[in-house]
Structures are given as C-alpha cells and as structure tokens.
Image (tube, rainbow, N blue to C red; front, side, top):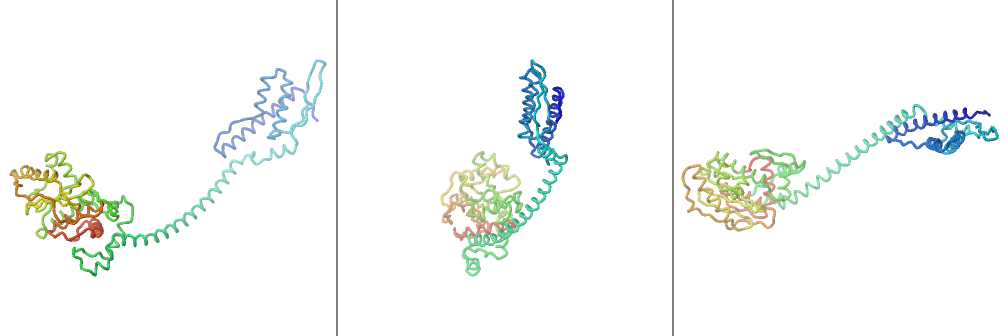
Amino acid sequence: MAKLSGSTAMNSVLTLEKQLKEKNRYLDLIINECQNKPMVKTSLFLKQRCDSQEQEDDPILALQQQVNSIRNLTIHCPAVQSLEIEIETQDKNGIKKEITPPVLEIGKKRRFWSSTYLRDDYVEQFRRRVAQRTEINMKHLNEAYQVFLRAKNRRIAYEGGIYKALLLEEFMPKSLHAIEEVQISSELIPLTKVQQDRLMELSEGPLEQVIVTKFKLDIHRSEIKILTEGAWLNDVIINFYMNLLAERSEKRPGQVPSVYAMNTFFVPRLLQSGFDGVKRWTRKVDLFSKDIILVPVHHSGVHWCLVVIDLRAKTMLYYNSKGGGNPKVMRALKIYLRMESLDKRQKPLDTNDFRIEHAQNVPQQDNMDDCGVFTCMFAEYLTRDALITFCKDDMNYFRIKMVLEIADGELWK
C-alpha cells in the first residue's frame, strides 16, 4: 500500500479531478452528437469541490471532503482510477497518519475504461449504424409506397366505372336508347357514344385546367363541372355561349339572323352610369345593322333573364323562366337605343312603335338552378328564328349539349 504525504495526496486528487473533467467533456460531446441537444454539466464532484474550497479554511479538512466526494461519486458514476491514498493529518499533539480505503475497486475501474461510449470511434460508429438503419427504413418505405400506388390505381379504376354509370344516369336523359328510338318534338339531337365518352373525359381532371380559350375568355374545368353538376351558371359561361351564338350568325349569313350579344356586365353598368358609362362598348360595331341584340340580365344577382331586341320586328321582349317583367331594365334599354342611334348614326330612333313587354307563354323552371340554362336556350332558339318548343325536362340534356359545344368552341347547328 502506497503511503502519501498531504501534498502528494492533494496532487493525486487534483489529477483525478482533471481526468474526471476530461471524461465529462468527452461524454458531453457524445451526447451532443447523438441527441443534438446541449448537455448541462452537473458534476457532483466539481460542485462539491467548489463548495469545500469556499466553506473550509483548513486545507487538510478540505482534502478530506474531496476524497469523500470522490467516494460518493463512484457509487453512481465510476469515472476515476482506483487508488489507495494515505492522508497525513496534524493536530496539537503532533502528526498522525491516517489511510483512506481504495476509491474504486479494480473491476469497476476496468469496466469503466473499457466502456463502448468512451471509445474514440464511438461517434463514427454510431453515425454508420444510423445511416444503415435509415437506408433500410427508406427501402421498406418505398416498397410500402409502391403497394399503396397499386391499390390506389385499382381503386380509381373501379370507382371510375361507378362514377361514369352514375353520371350518365343522373345527367343524361332517362334512356339514351330511347332518345334514338323516339321522335323528340323539341328537335333535340340524340347524343352519340363518342359524345358520351367526350363528356366523361371533360368531367375528370384538375378544376383549374383550361379546357378552351376563345373570345378572350378561358373556360376551365370548373365551368364544365358547373354545367354537369346542375349548379348556377356564372358570367363566364353565359358570355362564352352568347359569343358562340353571335359567331354562328357570322358564319352563316343569310341562313340565320345577324346577332350581337351584350356582355353580362352591360346592364349593371348602364343602370349605374347611364349611357355615358357604356357608349364606348359598341365603338367597333353598328348595332343597328344587326337583326337581333341579346342582352343578358342578372336580376338582383341571383336570377338570369334575357332581353331580346329584334330590330326587324321592332320588339323588345323580356324572357324570364320564372315569369314577370322588369320595367326598370326595359326603360333603361329603350333610352339606350335612342342615345346610341344619336351617338353613332347622328339620327334619332323612334321607339314609340316598339312592342316592349315581357314574353308570354314561355317555358318555366321548377327549381332554383336552371335559370342560366333557360336564358341560353331562349337565345339559341330565337337567334335561328326557331319556335321555343323545349321544356323544363330538357334542361339536363341542354347542360350536356352546352358542355360539348363550349368545349369544341362551336354550336351544333
């Protein structure tokens, strides 16, 4: 057993303290690497050492406190070498030798210094194991994702067949075969198998996708959905379809009346600002050279109606699928025609002999959604001088017909 003087013992303890600090620092580095989380040092040994230095004036007693701290520390964390130390103490009667027991057993010391966590390459080995586990997990994840995709594609294919059947049942007339076999008094054109497939193609895909661009208007798939799902028609659909009617008259001169269609925002601007607010809207066209002027009206922002001005017959009729007229709009349009004639032709227009009223005995809707379709069909029939023979039961058919016409950018006839 080694016998040490007081100064030698102090040096030995300080050496142990330095080694412990180095091990603590290394352990902190490992924890930071593994957890990416700062480690707060709470070394009981260091804390007690500071306390002993501040509280004890006798250096020998302080040394005794430090040795006791090391002994207590090794119970929880054997981080120092085993060493037998002899402490030299002095009292009034002289010098007395006192030997402390070993700080650590040899077995504990060896287990500590051979710990995996204290190896120099521990962090590198740890990273390698993490990378291997990550690679295996990603492989399993990719395999699971492929299984998911196959199941999803099978489900979409299955549901697509059901959706097609439901769509045809809900929005097609009662029986496509019946349409082909029975004479239809409203002169509806039977839908073909190609047209049915085209309808399904147009109904599937992103809502924001542009289906057709024409007349400086973009028709998105969302507009197609409005028509196929029985919803209210918006300004884009109404304006696009009215432009198709005007274009048909240009392509078939002499066969159908010449047509000009006002924008859906024309009437609100006219009512708000008068003639001065809209007089530039027709600077590139001579309204009075046309046979028919179509004026869509969005009554109170919730109901579509149509004013048809037939300059040939000197009539101004208000078509409303819920019945009734609109004197305010009709009066404003009457004044507009007079002002337009003076502004563009520098001559007055006599409207006293015009028949200005709401149309009688027109088909009526029985729901809140089809007013826009009625408005478009009133315009379609009247701009080819056809009698209005359709009824409310034809609205689903007309919605599909409008989808196909709009998508192709051309009317059927």
